[in-house]
Image (cartoon, rainbow, N blue to C red; front, top):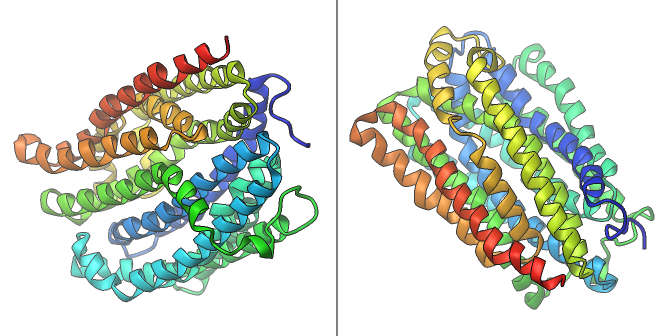
Length: 449
């Protein structure tokens, strides 16, 4: 069997998986971040164009939530089956995830496209910002199936030990996006609609690439016609495990809606635009620790399936320590250079002035995020779906969303909206990691004796 994660140094296996995955995630991030950079510098739009994109975020996050539901549910099961030498079961999981992603993408497209106007106003759109939000969303949604398939199935390439090929999946799309964005936005004068069209074309290219690879001869386990029929019993194994990733994204959607609606009241369109930029900065700075923990999951899952429990413990220790050190460094960068980070996305003087203080508040104690990533990925990789689901809900739905509404009313004003994030990172992150340590890590230590 190729790419046996039960041999060699655990940290080397994790790094070999993580670095190409980080690059792939960085490239994936460029799809949206490059759009925001160009849109933020769109002549004559001021901050309204970025505000419009920010209003569309919750629906794009909803698409990501359903992608995660099936991909993060299927990939760990796939890795565990590989480790246990159950190749037929692993291929069936892959085929079922493909079908579930395709079916759900059609339903999401239909729902979001038909109801986008009332949804955007519910999310906090004004008459001025709605024009930009709708122009972007009505084209972006047409790429839903391509986006979900390329993103959701790419993990199965990485799980078979082809992280470089997984990186190439998103690299292809990102290069196209980088080329097409300025062409459509500025040369063809399509504005935000051009950014959306460039993204959709790029997603189509990535989808074709990943499907060709997973149906080709280079991989050991492939998408096969006989495995495409949805197995209800298997689906109910995939969904509970993927519920953690789904809830994490769905609660992100909830928090974005609550933030935008509350910011509309306390800060207006300007602060909705600022939150759009801050979310972009957070995505960039979170990427290395997210890539590290995601890259560790196939290694942890494989060794767990192979009953190599000490190696699982080594992997958890390594990812946790590196994650904490990195997020401390990222926090320092934010403290020292808020204007520099904001200026990547906008030259609007009002947004830069108000955004610097908001950015510092939002990222206060950023290193606590590493505890959430470390605990969450360990639970998910080893199939502990209930714990993973609970801590996804705790941080976002139980802590962030209520605080976003309450803190401004308690006298903090617009600052309270940005303070809700660091408070949730500290409480939710520590609770997740401490629980993982006592209920999972210590159990693994006992099992290896």
